[in-house]
Length: 253
Image 1 (cartoon, rainbow, N blue to C red):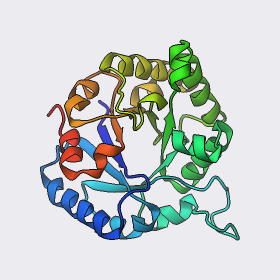
Image 2: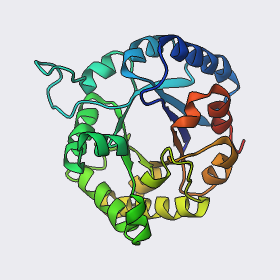
Image 3: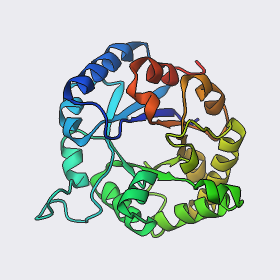
Image 4: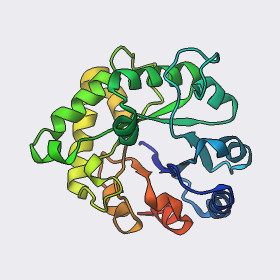
Protein backbone atom coordinates (compact mmCIF):
# COMPACT_ATOMS: atom_id res chain seq x y z
CA UNK A 1 0.00 0.00 0.00
CA UNK A 2 1.51 3.32 -1.10
CA UNK A 3 1.47 6.13 1.47
CA UNK A 4 -0.17 9.33 0.36
CA UNK A 5 2.04 12.43 0.09
CA UNK A 6 0.71 15.97 0.02
CA UNK A 7 3.39 18.51 -0.91
CA UNK A 8 3.03 22.29 -0.93
CA UNK A 9 5.03 24.27 -3.48
CA UNK A 10 5.06 27.86 -2.26
CA UNK A 11 6.90 29.11 -5.37
CA UNK A 12 8.07 32.76 -5.11
CA UNK A 13 5.58 33.80 -2.45
CA UNK A 14 5.54 35.04 1.14
CA UNK A 15 7.91 37.54 2.70
CA UNK A 16 9.76 36.39 5.81
CA UNK A 17 7.07 37.30 8.33
CA UNK A 18 4.27 35.89 6.21
CA UNK A 19 6.21 32.68 5.65
CA UNK A 20 6.88 32.25 9.35
CA UNK A 21 3.21 32.84 10.19
CA UNK A 22 2.09 30.21 7.69
CA UNK A 23 4.74 27.75 8.83
CA UNK A 24 3.76 28.19 12.47
CA UNK A 25 0.09 27.59 11.66
CA UNK A 26 0.94 24.38 9.80
CA UNK A 27 3.15 23.19 12.66
CA UNK A 28 0.31 23.84 15.10
CA UNK A 29 -2.11 21.90 12.90
CA UNK A 30 0.27 19.00 12.30
CA UNK A 31 -0.83 16.98 15.34
CA UNK A 32 -4.29 16.58 13.79
CA UNK A 33 -3.05 15.60 10.34
CA UNK A 34 -3.79 11.98 9.35
CA UNK A 35 -0.98 9.59 10.26
CA UNK A 36 -1.43 7.87 6.89
CA UNK A 37 -0.32 10.99 4.97
CA UNK A 38 3.21 12.30 4.50
CA UNK A 39 3.46 16.09 4.31
CA UNK A 40 6.12 18.24 2.63
CA UNK A 41 6.40 21.97 2.08
CA UNK A 42 8.76 23.63 -0.39
CA UNK A 43 9.18 27.30 0.60
CA UNK A 44 11.51 29.83 -1.06
CA UNK A 45 15.13 28.71 -0.66
CA UNK A 46 15.95 31.45 1.87
CA UNK A 47 13.68 29.78 4.45
CA UNK A 48 14.79 26.17 4.03
CA UNK A 49 17.35 25.94 6.83
CA UNK A 50 15.14 27.59 9.45
CA UNK A 51 12.14 25.50 8.53
CA UNK A 52 14.09 22.26 8.47
CA UNK A 53 15.40 22.93 11.98
CA UNK A 54 12.04 23.75 13.51
CA UNK A 55 9.50 21.67 11.59
CA UNK A 56 7.53 18.97 13.34
CA UNK A 57 8.20 15.32 12.57
CA UNK A 58 4.98 15.36 10.53
CA UNK A 59 6.03 18.16 8.18
CA UNK A 60 9.18 17.71 6.11
CA UNK A 61 10.93 20.29 3.99
CA UNK A 62 11.73 20.24 0.29
CA UNK A 63 13.52 22.54 -2.13
CA UNK A 64 11.82 23.97 -5.21
CA UNK A 65 14.88 23.29 -7.33
CA UNK A 66 18.41 21.87 -7.17
CA UNK A 67 21.61 22.29 -9.17
CA UNK A 68 22.15 19.88 -12.04
CA UNK A 69 25.90 19.92 -11.50
CA UNK A 70 27.61 16.75 -10.30
CA UNK A 71 29.97 18.74 -8.07
CA UNK A 72 28.90 19.00 -4.44
CA UNK A 73 30.60 22.40 -4.09
CA UNK A 74 32.72 24.78 -6.16
CA UNK A 75 32.80 28.11 -7.98
CA UNK A 76 29.23 28.04 -9.27
CA UNK A 77 27.62 31.31 -8.23
CA UNK A 78 23.93 31.02 -7.42
CA UNK A 79 23.84 27.22 -7.51
CA UNK A 80 22.71 25.09 -4.57
CA UNK A 81 23.81 21.46 -4.72
CA UNK A 82 21.81 18.47 -3.56
CA UNK A 83 24.53 17.76 -0.99
CA UNK A 84 24.19 21.25 0.50
CA UNK A 85 20.42 20.88 0.69
CA UNK A 86 20.79 17.50 2.37
CA UNK A 87 23.24 18.90 4.92
CA UNK A 88 20.72 21.60 5.84
CA UNK A 89 18.06 19.03 6.71
CA UNK A 90 16.13 19.20 3.43
CA UNK A 91 14.52 15.88 2.45
CA UNK A 92 13.01 16.48 -1.00
CA UNK A 93 13.79 18.46 -4.16
CA UNK A 94 11.29 19.33 -6.89
CA UNK A 95 12.80 18.86 -10.36
CA UNK A 96 11.37 19.51 -13.81
CA UNK A 97 8.51 21.80 -12.80
CA UNK A 98 6.81 23.28 -15.85
CA UNK A 99 7.78 26.79 -14.76
CA UNK A 100 11.45 25.79 -14.78
CA UNK A 101 10.94 24.32 -18.24
CA UNK A 102 9.09 27.40 -19.51
CA UNK A 103 11.10 30.24 -17.95
CA UNK A 104 14.55 28.64 -17.70
CA UNK A 105 14.59 26.43 -20.77
CA UNK A 106 15.11 23.20 -18.84
CA UNK A 107 14.72 19.97 -20.81
CA UNK A 108 14.52 16.37 -19.68
CA UNK A 109 18.20 15.68 -20.30
CA UNK A 110 19.16 18.43 -17.85
CA UNK A 111 16.42 17.38 -15.46
CA UNK A 112 17.85 13.86 -15.53
CA UNK A 113 21.11 15.34 -14.25
CA UNK A 114 19.23 16.95 -11.38
CA UNK A 115 17.70 13.58 -10.53
CA UNK A 116 21.19 12.07 -10.61
CA UNK A 117 22.40 14.75 -8.19
CA UNK A 118 19.52 13.94 -5.85
CA UNK A 119 20.24 10.21 -6.04
CA UNK A 120 23.90 10.79 -5.21
CA UNK A 121 23.03 12.95 -2.18
CA UNK A 122 20.18 10.65 -1.04
CA UNK A 123 17.70 13.48 -1.55
CA UNK A 124 14.22 12.44 -2.71
CA UNK A 125 13.49 13.83 -6.20
CA UNK A 126 9.94 14.89 -7.04
CA UNK A 127 9.95 14.71 -10.83
CA UNK A 128 7.31 16.83 -12.57
CA UNK A 129 5.85 16.04 -15.97
CA UNK A 130 2.80 17.15 -17.90
CA UNK A 131 1.40 18.33 -21.20
CA UNK A 132 0.34 21.74 -22.52
CA UNK A 133 -3.21 22.58 -23.54
CA UNK A 134 -2.28 22.32 -27.22
CA UNK A 135 -0.78 18.87 -26.65
CA UNK A 136 -3.87 17.75 -24.77
CA UNK A 137 -6.27 19.07 -27.40
CA UNK A 138 -4.28 17.44 -30.21
CA UNK A 139 -4.52 14.10 -28.37
CA UNK A 140 -0.76 13.85 -27.83
CA UNK A 141 -0.81 14.01 -24.04
CA UNK A 142 0.10 10.37 -23.44
CA UNK A 143 2.91 10.53 -26.00
CA UNK A 144 4.32 13.76 -24.54
CA UNK A 145 4.33 12.58 -20.94
CA UNK A 146 5.74 9.16 -21.80
CA UNK A 147 8.63 10.86 -23.62
CA UNK A 148 9.27 13.18 -20.67
CA UNK A 149 9.36 10.29 -18.21
CA UNK A 150 11.42 7.96 -20.40
CA UNK A 151 14.01 10.65 -21.22
CA UNK A 152 14.47 12.02 -17.71
CA UNK A 153 14.72 8.56 -16.14
CA UNK A 154 16.96 7.09 -18.83
CA UNK A 155 20.11 5.39 -17.57
CA UNK A 156 18.92 4.84 -14.02
CA UNK A 157 18.30 1.52 -12.31
CA UNK A 158 15.23 0.75 -10.27
CA UNK A 159 17.41 0.63 -7.18
CA UNK A 160 18.79 4.12 -7.80
CA UNK A 161 15.27 5.50 -8.17
CA UNK A 162 13.80 3.67 -5.20
CA UNK A 163 12.86 6.98 -3.52
CA UNK A 164 11.58 8.67 -6.70
CA UNK A 165 8.25 10.49 -6.65
CA UNK A 166 6.55 11.51 -9.89
CA UNK A 167 4.18 14.48 -10.06
CA UNK A 168 1.82 14.72 -13.02
CA UNK A 169 0.96 18.36 -13.57
CA UNK A 170 -1.03 19.20 -16.70
CA UNK A 171 0.43 22.59 -17.65
CA UNK A 172 -3.01 23.83 -18.68
CA UNK A 173 -4.26 23.36 -15.12
CA UNK A 174 -1.45 25.09 -13.21
CA UNK A 175 -2.58 28.42 -11.81
CA UNK A 176 -5.42 28.65 -14.32
CA UNK A 177 -8.28 27.51 -12.15
CA UNK A 178 -8.84 24.63 -14.56
CA UNK A 179 -8.47 21.17 -13.11
CA UNK A 180 -8.19 17.80 -14.75
CA UNK A 181 -11.19 15.71 -13.83
CA UNK A 182 -10.61 12.85 -11.44
CA UNK A 183 -11.06 10.51 -14.40
CA UNK A 184 -8.49 12.39 -16.51
CA UNK A 185 -6.03 12.35 -13.61
CA UNK A 186 -6.51 8.61 -13.07
CA UNK A 187 -6.16 7.88 -16.78
CA UNK A 188 -2.82 9.69 -17.00
CA UNK A 189 -1.52 8.35 -13.70
CA UNK A 190 -2.32 4.82 -14.81
CA UNK A 191 -0.46 5.40 -18.08
CA UNK A 192 2.56 6.81 -16.25
CA UNK A 193 2.59 3.76 -13.98
CA UNK A 194 2.37 1.48 -17.03
CA UNK A 195 5.27 3.33 -18.62
CA UNK A 196 7.33 3.02 -15.45
CA UNK A 197 6.51 -0.69 -15.36
CA UNK A 198 7.94 -1.07 -18.87
CA UNK A 199 11.09 0.80 -17.82
CA UNK A 200 11.75 -0.67 -14.37
CA UNK A 201 9.44 -3.62 -13.77
CA UNK A 202 6.18 -4.35 -11.99
CA UNK A 203 7.50 -4.19 -8.43
CA UNK A 204 8.96 -0.73 -8.92
CA UNK A 205 5.82 0.53 -10.68
CA UNK A 206 3.60 -0.67 -7.86
CA UNK A 207 5.69 1.15 -5.26
CA UNK A 208 6.38 4.49 -6.96
CA UNK A 209 4.18 7.32 -5.76
CA UNK A 210 2.55 9.51 -8.42
CA UNK A 211 1.08 12.84 -7.33
CA UNK A 212 -1.43 15.07 -9.08
CA UNK A 213 -0.78 18.81 -9.38
CA UNK A 214 -2.85 21.48 -11.05
CA UNK A 215 -5.47 23.62 -9.26
CA UNK A 216 -6.09 20.97 -6.62
CA UNK A 217 -8.32 22.43 -3.88
CA UNK A 218 -10.17 21.29 -0.76
CA UNK A 219 -13.31 20.88 -2.86
CA UNK A 220 -11.87 18.41 -5.36
CA UNK A 221 -8.98 16.76 -3.49
CA UNK A 222 -10.92 13.84 -2.02
CA UNK A 223 -12.32 12.80 -5.40
CA UNK A 224 -8.93 13.04 -7.13
CA UNK A 225 -7.04 11.33 -4.31
CA UNK A 226 -9.63 8.57 -4.25
CA UNK A 227 -8.49 7.24 -7.62
CA UNK A 228 -6.34 4.08 -7.39
CA UNK A 229 -3.24 5.45 -9.12
CA UNK A 230 -3.26 8.91 -7.52
CA UNK A 231 -1.04 8.95 -4.44
CA UNK A 232 -1.50 12.53 -3.29
CA UNK A 233 -0.84 15.99 -4.65
CA UNK A 234 1.72 18.66 -5.39
CA UNK A 235 -0.23 21.73 -4.36
CA UNK A 236 0.45 25.30 -5.51
CA UNK A 237 -1.91 28.17 -4.66
CA UNK A 238 -3.92 26.26 -2.06
CA UNK A 239 -0.70 25.51 -0.15
CA UNK A 240 -0.37 29.22 0.68
CA UNK A 241 -3.38 29.12 2.99
CA UNK A 242 -3.03 26.99 6.11
CA UNK A 243 -6.74 26.12 6.28
CA UNK A 244 -6.90 25.03 2.63
CA UNK A 245 -3.66 23.05 2.73
CA UNK A 246 -4.66 21.31 5.95
CA UNK A 247 -8.05 20.44 4.42
CA UNK A 248 -6.34 18.92 1.38
CA UNK A 249 -4.05 16.86 3.62
CA UNK A 250 -7.10 15.46 5.39
CA UNK A 251 -9.20 15.00 2.25
CA UNK A 252 -10.93 11.63 2.24
CA UNK A 253 -10.19 10.77 5.86
